[in-house]
Amino acid sequence: YDDKDAEELTLVALECGYRNFFASVLARNQRGFARAIKRSGVPREELFICGSVLSNQAQGFDAARKLSARGCRENLEAFASATDYVDMIMLDYPGPDDDSIRGQWAALEEMAAQQTTRSLAVSNFSPK
Image (cartoon, rainbow, N blue to C red):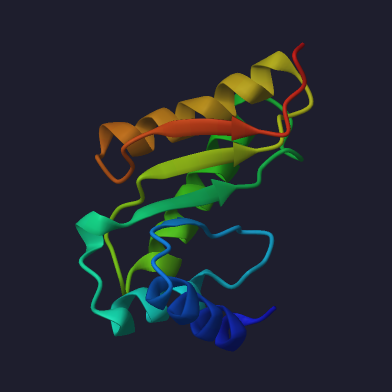
């Protein structure tokens, strides 16, 4: 669903008492979600917002770090109307090799060091 639907559905969820949200970069509707948060009047500190970074196509440490850092910035830009941080940023899918994954993770650690996220997570990783 698009930003308009995300805004309306998020408002309904907030009215029903939901406070934990995952706004996926794959859905491309984070701006609508952020508009709903702002419109709702629910205090930011009552919410848990998780964003995601998709950078699994980058090969090598530097390329993966750079693409992941861009993903972190894009999350903050998309949520900017409602918040200047996310509670969690999730790395959605691992890079093609260990060096790439280290680069991806380094970008998330940089985001944490800048205090624009409070926690880091991974998704769609295998046990290996």
